[in-house]
Image 1 (cartoon, one colour):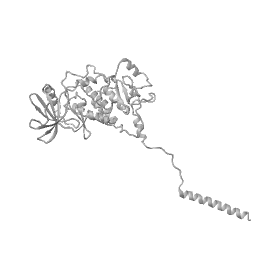
Image 2 (cartoon, one colour):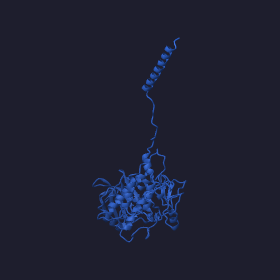
Image 3 (cartoon, rainbow, N blue to C red):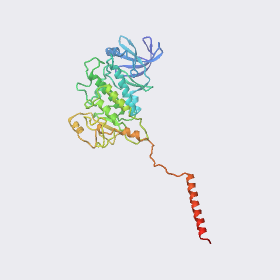
Length: 387
């Protein structure tokens, strides 16, 4: 391991170790020429070809949601990648902050924005390695995406492959193509990877955890306060067998943008459960029409604070999903009108009957009239019946 205090290429002073990843070691450093803080990735010789190829594809990237690359220093046994230093929260920290549904939707839109930039124009680059290690949120709230066009973390994607179903030709698509090269399958992989990240931010988990393990049974477990619309959108990205599967970052971004315009920050004064809670399927209408997940229905477990969605697509589960299931309807059967209901019933607002109280001047006038009437009657009686 390289020691702090060392100067790379007579320019970059390594100041502190940031983290040790599976392939590379990352240091915070000082660019002594431009007097700015940078990040330095130290890459072992065995991975030089892959990293050099990735940098050739991405060196000209300039986007607010993508971490910039400044310099490349090549030594006989080591590659040093000098990048923009991002001061902010890594994905593990985001898991501990309990982001609201609207914030999670915004995270997804920003990641999709980076993917769309990389895949557009003459660039035509897919990410391919969109794992929690590639995501940071800076102090301004911008999501910064790193590690474009690098070899995929097969350990990570293998662990999550049974959630939503593996691709028909393997865990990842088009493995024979050079890393980063765009294809329809790889665009699908990237969109699904975004869905997995968003699911982890909204999954039922123990407070304080720094990572989310994939569920053993492959079922998506959302926190109860997650709106059903967002549950459904994420499921469509993750579950490849979904009849309305989201296979591109463009489609996922559009869906999230539409949701972000309706999602509201949580209010402690509203005692209404989230949209993932179960309702009478006869009275429910789907935002997506009559479509259903090609999976088993979500199960409401009273002993946990989550709602389950199963990504399995076996024949038995498809039969269950195709039949009415009053006890546990699919996400597509949930009532998506909660958000509009919240907008028309404001917290603390109460309806009162109109007040008909009489003012003091009116009461005095009525009193005077009554007194005058009694006085007149008394005077009349006294004159008719004299003593």
